[in-house]
Image (cartoon, rainbow, N blue to C red; front, side, top):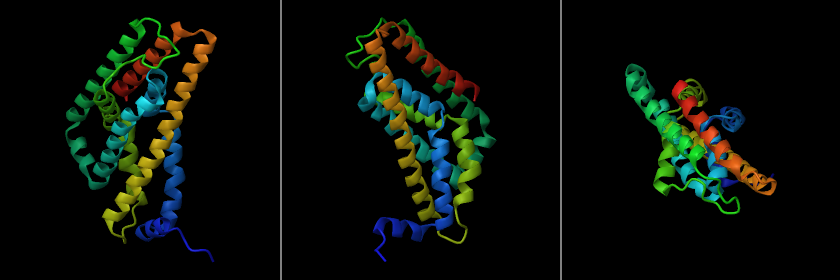
Length: 217
């Protein structure tokens, strides 16, 4: 019998293997499905390219990890007791995304052979991803309702939580890359088809859609 991979053996020692086997496909299906963060990755893949979108992904993954940890540790109960705090976060994030979408709509047609449709600083991109992740009510709902079900009560909490968060971050990163790459290829398609006039409108509309989604979510 071939030896097990040390990292996998260590991981399965921290968690219930049956719960782990169920959690991975469950979260992958949830992560890869269209949502606010994935739409944002698609938009930025079109607007600034995959490489620069990595800064948004870094912020988004930080936010997702924070939401997962907070939900598992019961911080979500605080948000439930003070809904106005959560509401303010949502509306600020939505307003920012709507403003960015409006700017894209009004921007002149770009040179599709160069990346740089929506120039933003790395910090702004990271904050954009972070705010979208922590302000997403569906993300909180998933973490609060489903994440505890994959934590075995007879095993130590901290190692299980760290393992689950690591899996969440890896899967979420892969999903973000898929969507950002799709946006990048859509940009190249529009470049070949002479669709420069439409790129700003598509990217702006998607950005507005994320903002509305966040505000009404």
